[in-house]
Image (tube, rainbow, N blue to C red):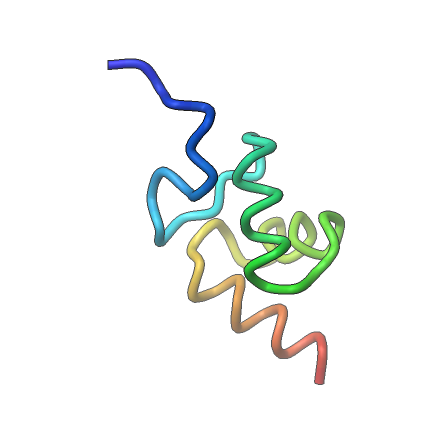
Length: 61
C-alpha cells in the first residue's frame, strides 16, 4: 500500500512528522505557529503531539 500524499492530515494523529510537507502545513495550522516554531518545538521535546502542544503553549505564555 502506498502513501496517499493528497491526504491533508497526519498519518498518525499522535505524532508529528516534520519531514513531510503536508504534515508540517497541517500542524502549523493546527497549532497556529510558524514552521520554524514547530520544528524547534519538535527538536526540543520530540514528535508526540501532546508534548509539542504543551511546549508551544508554554512558549506563548
